Length: 120
Image (cartoon, rainbow, N blue to C red; front, side, top):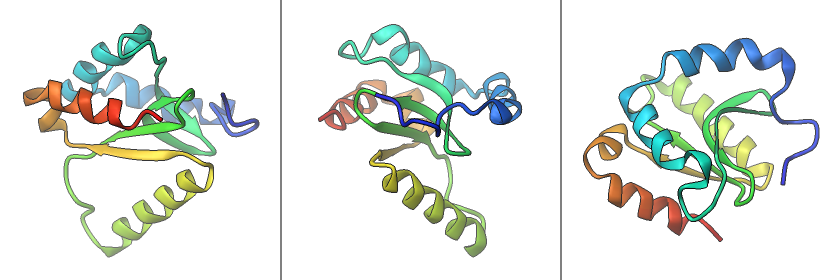
C-alpha cells in the first residue's frame, strides 16, 4: 500500500538518483538480499521518497523503513533534524528500523532476522 501524494515525488528525483549512484558496499549488499521479493516475498524499493525525505529502503506492504546508519549525528542540530525526520515517518504510520552498515557486511543473517521481526 502506498501513501497517496507522498511517494516518489517527481521534484525529488534529483535527490534520489545521486544516492543510488553513491551507494556504499553495505547499501549494495543489503539491496541484493531485499530486491525482487527475496525476503519472505516482501517487495522493497530503494532510495524511496516519502513526503520529501528519501529513505534507504522501504517495504510498502509492511510500512517498514530501513535506514543504514553508520554513526551518530555530528552535532545537536543534526540529531534534532534526524529526530524530526523519524517523527515525520512515524506520523505516516511507518516503522523505522536502523541498521549499522558494519552489521550488513559482517552479520547479514542477523540483519535479515531483524528485518523479518519488523514484519507484522
